[in-house]
Image (cartoon, one colour):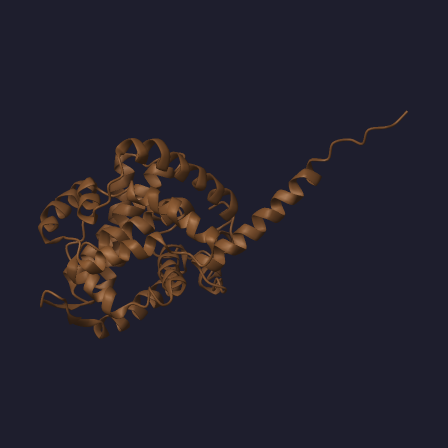
Length: 307
């Protein structure tokens, strides 16, 4: 009589863990670059960083799919400010080195969110040293400079609005209204240290800010070129296909007036019935792939195992 060997769950789990490790390495290389700079997150013991594990900033910025989709939405929304887009168009290398640009942006957000207090302050100081060099004249004849406090407020507010929208759309447990206000109040700290002024610190303040700034916003030729570039972003057919799906989800996070300015005509039935479910599927996959990551483990060691 043939004996059937007992079922071994570990044998089934091993291939999935190997797949997760391979995909995680790809995600890290694409988003963070080859070096995660774990020294920014590992010490000193007990240091909460700028925010700490109980903050809404840790919660929102720790959701990989919300940040990825929200990050693409932020780029689209930020592009509608003619002066901000003129600075990016003239001084950024995002066309020649899009992966490098993504790595630097992700590294700054991750370091200021989860890094030690010293690492976060160093990252902010580095950006403040660079900003005075970024200045020029927009195509409409107006001067711009990257250290303009009002321009810094625009870039920050557009960014955190989209990060939060990504989290609310894709996280299993969205934030309550009070928690959303706490997130805006938390996140304002980095913008203020960069030199921004009048940074909105609640949902109501963010709504009033957009109402006030909206007359200044429009899709310049550079903004439309940025949209086309992002839609085709990727170093391989697989990356480009994934980017297109994420971009569809990102478009759904934008205010209706922003989609209209960019000329994106995607019916609500498609955004909600097709794009959003696909984005949620990608979200579940990314959450499985990315957590717990090496950065998360390093941060937990620094602030305490239970964080």
